[in-house]
Image (cartoon, rainbow, N blue to C red):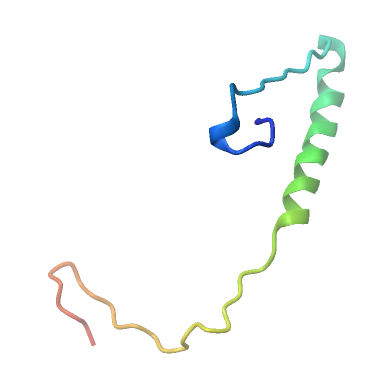
Length: 68
């Protein structure tokens, strides 16, 4: 985690930790997984493949010779 400034303006890294009692560890991991999944799915977009050619490329064998 950083302080939000560029690398040249950072004096040191910022670290944080969470202490969870042993009796609540299962509930913590359930909620933590939900937060992680929500964070990953909100920022991902499908890849733009509109410029990709539809031709199949010829496979090259181990000897470096193109196969038909």
